[in-house]
Image (cartoon, rainbow, N blue to C red; front, side, top):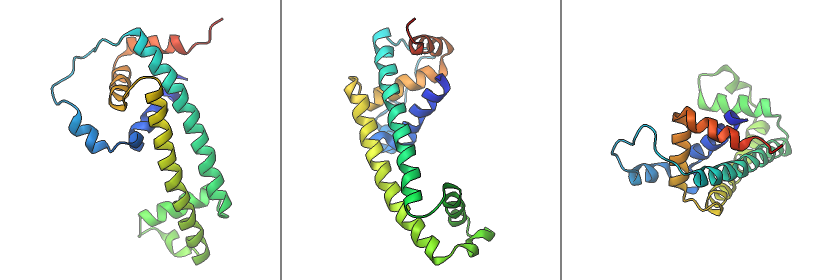
Length: 162
């Protein structure tokens, strides 16, 4: 669960959570951070709550992506093949893509772009609903990823109360 949660949060970083990553990098101080920054338990609780929301948003996004691709008449595997072939013009499969498949792929890409924008907005809102600005959330995520003690604390918070 912990690895999935951190992966979901890392996805937020990759998507930019509605903020451009270069802008975040410019606003982040360049001074070296302490190796184990102090993070209040209250902030960890809010982080876990936000991360759970991000996990739900991520799962919804995955469902929407699958539906969008299938709606255009492509399987996920075929979509991936076309995607990879377009990234590598030397790929042999590029010649095996019909015009119909290219059109389906392009229509799916338009939908996926909108899904990504919507996901970014939802993720940013989920983080802010817990009282964080995105840079602070990312700072806590980074600290958790680098600190085994914080990881253990978060794992304990994720365990259902019995």
